[in-house]
Length: 177
Image (cartoon, rainbow, N blue to C red; front, side, top):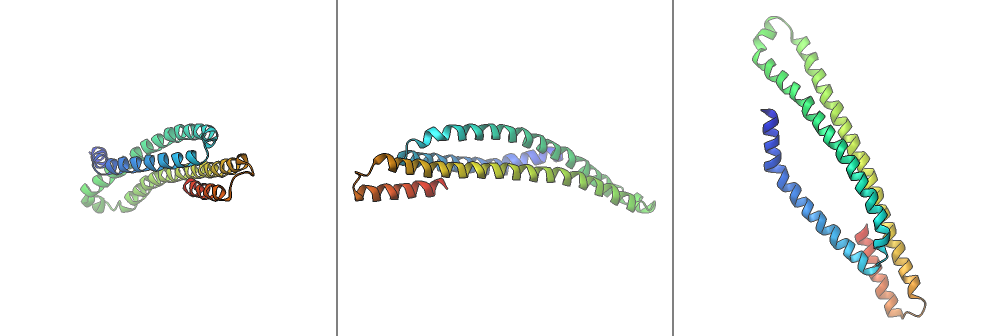
């Protein structure tokens, strides 16, 4: 019953929020890539290996996160059941003076949940570090292709063109960051 209600809560509350965040993120990424690509088209060549690394990182993390989520659900159920049984049998627990035993058993179940939560936190930080590193790689690639684009223009470009290109490079770099 607890499992079903948590799944229903996820469908009712978290799924629409997640979908909204997905659409917003896809639009942001799409427009940013289009802007950077318009300023320096060679950016897309360097984006292929970064995208490949991101794809494999996502696959690896998804498998781990799915397993950790399963373990989280499995570790919560015994605590909920134990808590419900303890509430039902409170009078018997007090009559036989078994409170220390039940506190210890509840603590062991909470520790099991905390172990899984710690692993989930560690996995999220692992992913965060790698995604931030890929973000730095994308910003570096945008800067590098912008500089190379200016070098390829040659010294014959007018001052006005140089200023326009510098402004566009600054805009694309700020979006890349």
